[in-house]
Amino acid sequence: MPTIKDGTLIYVAHPEKNIDPAVHFKYVEKDIDLDTVPLNGGVLLKTLYLSSDPYIRYRLRDPTVETFIPPIALGDPIDNFGAAVVLRSEDAKFKPGDYVGGYLEFSEYSVYPGKIHHELKGPLEKVEQIPGVPLSAYTGTLGMAGNTGYQGIKGHAVEALKTVLMFVSGGAALSGRAFVVEYVKAIAPHIKIIASPGTPDKVETMKNAGVDVAFSYKTQDTFVVLKQHGPLDIYWDNVAGPTLDAALLNFNNDGLILLATTTAASSGYAPSSSPRTTPTANTGSLPAQHFDEIFKRRLRVEGFLIAHGKSGPVLAHFAEEVVPLVQQGKINIREHRYQGLREAGKALADVHIGANTGKAVIVVAQAQE
Image (cartoon, rainbow, N blue to C red; front, side):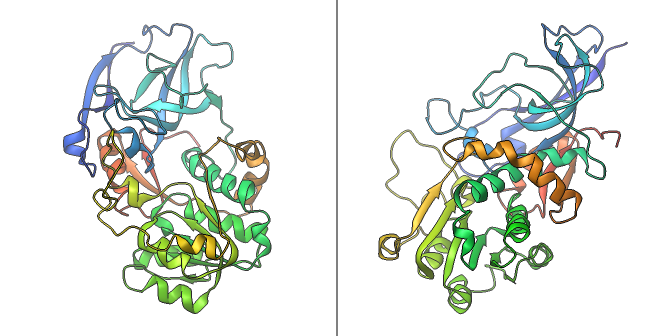
């Protein structure tokens, strides 16, 4: 086979605050011969779908700055969870035509595991084509977003679901929020859910997902809405800041706060090697003021990372429980698709400004479905 062009998105500059695709990434092309590229015992992949997630902002930093997640080195391809098809294999576990999922380079073609190694990059796994479900779902509903929502609820909130009122901040702009709403409604339909997306179309999306009270935090006072419909029993926090403050002041005693990420931090994340003395400097918003409500109301605050900690093992049951709910239409797949790697930088930036209305998915090539 003659050589062909292989496009890749390269990380070229550390953001000081928000992501600027034209400054921080560079799309490049190189020649590749798919028949002769060395596999070194691995597999040659054709990338199909890649995920854009807010947490990646924490990886875009100087490697001397320590945090909970490994950095991406300047000059390396961006990588994140994605789905691909095997073209060639020297690994007995895979054969050409297999669909796989794993941490993939933002390249049209790549050899796995390749030369870049970090703690997030586990082994490839075969993924099943589910009738009526696009393969891209493995980047969102059946991938990181869904797994995060499932782990938070099943691993931390089973007892709390015996209560009556839940608040979910962030809304449809964040990939897992609609999943959280639909999953809770599927297993605990008595729960009343409040959600606070930012735009009218996202308010409608959250209503369609089953939210009982959906409002735009940009046009309505969150404190007033929570006061009217509260008190809260569970708060799934995605934004911290003033929204967390409003929730703290409208909680029942013995309530639960769950934190998997906070875009108020990640969207304006400016990493530093020293402790922050000005908490508003990087987020551009006010910090929460009423942490004393946590002990006054005996609130339980639990943070978690996907597949880590005491709640990680619940993910062993994710597929057997969630796939049927997707097939039954109780959990829906909502995607905001970006076409090609030239749009990948925009996808990485958009998840921090609410420009995506569903799971941000970069379509590198279409699967045959």
